[in-house]
Image (cartoon, rainbow, N blue to C red; front, side):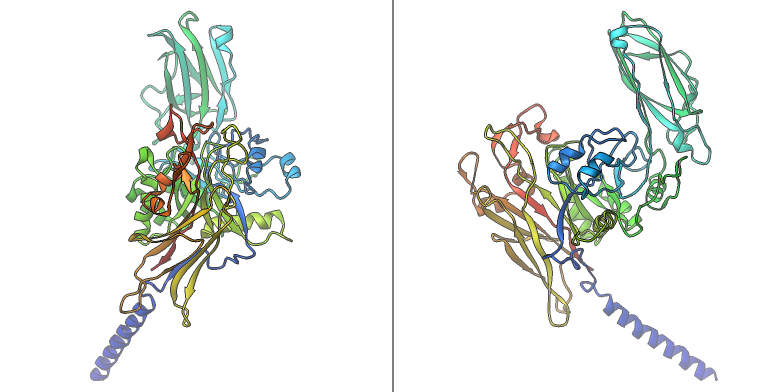
Length: 541
């Protein structure tokens, strides 16, 4: 019996070991493929211009920017907002005028503990309050000045972060000028612990003439602010009550993705609209370790901004965002890339969604498809050349471009194993941008450059037949044969340039183009002349 027991144990041991070997073979590197374009019918799917992070100066009831963006070719309009950081609905009038317009709840969130700015596409997550005091001190010069902010969230120990606000003060006056501020209905507080500070009672507190913010905790729905000042010293006074996330980022992410809170009217202020769509984007991104931690927190943390009009591909010409994308992908972490204008309206940055045919679908069904496209990475980034009028000034439709991917496919052998990534592009303006260059980027850098609209990158395999590349993504450029008003621009010239250099190729400076803040503030900007598109990565694990 003892021998039988030993035999049974040995049999289980060898069987388990054998099964482990089989399991290891099944999950060997290079056999698990994450291809966001796997189910795209390239002949039928529609290319829908969208944005993941776009402000448009709105009051909640009507968005004056919507018509402008529609005219620029955007058909999916999930506008962001800061104060309050809550979804920006399209107006009824706009919906009636453009019945095919698509929307998603979306907002830019800020002031979370341990996180920078982030958007939550297709989430109702709402934080914040935004109210600029409507005072006319500059004209009237009357003291004291009083203003009452209403509709605030009183302190609730179960949700203390919702009672934290920052009072923005902008005071201009003579050098050394001060005023006295009294706040009723709130007390100064620590925005991280929510606890009152040692100087919590704001009763005739001396404030110097400058720009400053004071964190307060609302104790009631109304907060009254009073200023006693000397009109001979103070020239102007402006104040705004604002709010941010003010809670640990993991809690904020959970609320944004799975929260169930509703407002007093029963409208959702947390959670995703569709469980299989939308997600979080990390804006003007942070460090490598910080990004990895957040991407691995939840698969619905989708990716990072690769291009933001404020800083192009990274601050101060560093290409930090662009380089971070590849550094993250090298770890095997899935990360989608987003291309955004941010606060800029007439500049560059678009996400092009690939959506099933719209015929016969309701608006909600089409919006659901848009949400799923963001979740699955079924889109690509676009930086279009800027359109100019006869006077050399930028004009409508600005960065709109028909240059697009018409196919991104995995070529497979008879056994269904991936052999190559095949790509086709089309739609370039042949009179202005007649030349095409396609680049295949892998974990080894630029692995192949082809100067034609149809290109193929053959995957490398080791002796065991496993794919060596950890990922493949594709960049394509439609560019003119000259730049700088006639200087030749050859394929060899372009191949030597990085994407930042390509994005700044131009014929003229200025043209009403605001440029990239980090490069062009206070000087003329190069008006872009190249159409650029960027696929999402196909990953092999």
